Length: 385
Figure 1 (spheres, rainbow, N blue to C red):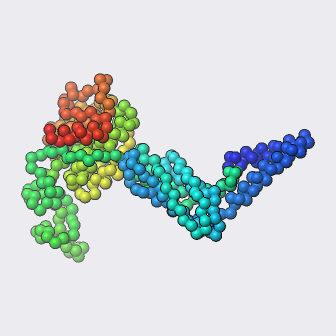
Figure 2: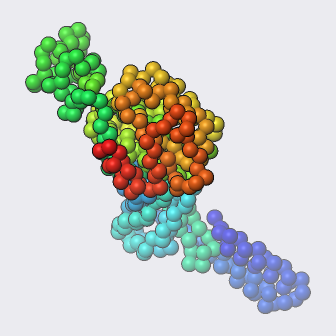
Figure 3: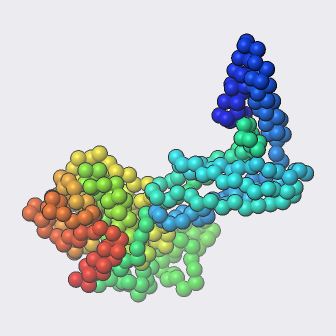
């Protein structure tokens, strides 16, 4: 296919030839013919299909917002001729990345590396990969696609935080502690027997059905529970950057609890986001889910607290909101007594114009957070308060 330059040279050459013949200017005819011949030669240059092997991978496939990620393309010249004028183009979301390929001799291989954009969260489609061959004048090009599209997952950026202490007596060994009081244990799932398991917890019916010794896995319900309310209303935040920081803060708090194998319940005014029971992969699941959270057009945040009125009681409640509209946040007053401690994070620069909600029955500790560093400092103070 011709490039825009090639089409321009073709049109200009045809115009010069027509003008030269019409008015008897031989020089114009010669110049126009030269343009047309150059386009024909450029097309002939790019017409042979290059014999190439191309494979792209993403490293790493999951990355925190703003952290580096790169595409790596392994190119191999499987033909018998040296290839010049190659260019690799890869699409990442709504951006396009183009890298020039150095001279590639017959049988040679070369790895191309290029940075992928990670400024925004989400599942970012990458590809398909295109290899473009152009002539030296850039008049014609041949494009071939290789492979299928891939996915880069940009997750929230997090900082490592301590877990807010709550409750009276918690079994910090984890959800499967053998020393936990029986009164604090409840059935969670069935799993295969491992050496050392209590034989009194063998589930004989499942054992007979599967032919494998199965035992009941019990969880300690006295573990610290963390309930997170993430306000995703667009009106609650002064800017999109403030909302991204709010998601980062929620992710950091949830990840801290999940990393310690503690249950996490995450909701927003649009409905439940994710509930975890304290297994080993909860932290990754939380980050993957929060990578997809978007702002909503809901006017009130009250719906986020409706489901918490039937909370079993205890644990910590953390509300993450902005410094903008506070409509519906007063509903926190209906549920705050069901939790052992309640903390609110106000995301964004603290200004005199920022609405205050302390006079609406929600006089809870409020931390004004303008960065993850401020979250780390304020959260450590809150944890020892």
